[in-house]
Amino acid sequence: MEAFTRFLNQTQGRDRLFRATQYTCMLLSYVLEPQAGKEEVVMKLKKLESSVSTGRKWFRLGNVVHAVQATEQSMYATDLVPRLCLTLANLNRVLYFICDTILWVRSVGLTSSINKEKWRMWAVRHYYYSLLLSLVRDLYEIFLQMEQVAHDRAKRAKSPSQDPGCSVADEETEWLQSFLLLLFRSLRKHPPLFLDTVKNLCDILNPLHQLGIYQSNPGVIGLGGLLSSIAGIITVAYPHMKLKTH
Image: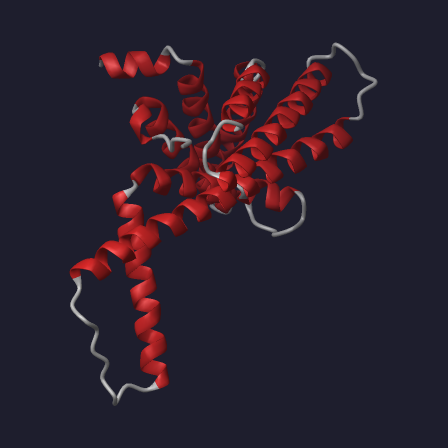
């Protein structure tokens, strides 16, 4: 109970909870919409989704400062690839939150001279670039983990023996199985890396759809957003599960 209270006391914790609610409503409304007699339920779910989405904007108002701080911290990473990817990703997050704040100013009616669609597309682009760079960093970390696991495995293994009767197809199947097993073992040894990769992969579905790069539907986006929110809740509730910058 104490951990749950501490989680709710954090702005990020409340935002993750609201985000999970928002995407759950999106997923449920997509599933229920084709069913007869569910029109009222679907309408209520869509209204709740819209209300939660609007409420989340208040939580994001101060995120520009956090993104700037994250950019400064990432510049001191020892490894070149994570340093470059995270610095550029966080810079894009800063620009995304600036665009998001401008859109919030427009939505509350403080000014009407802002081109909503133009700023929305800029926000989506910077969000997409941030996620793409974060995924590059994840793939690099996965490669390092796989390399380490393969090295440790080779130390314990005896000299390899190959069956001379193996066909090319058998060798390709064996290679694929070995690769997938190595990937599974690498991610199992590093849960924070697994969570971060899943979160970024699920998050990127929405901007891919909005930018027209890969068309999806509200059901897939809702499911991806929900899974991403659960991963985010875990990292906020258990800070040791967040992927660290070395």
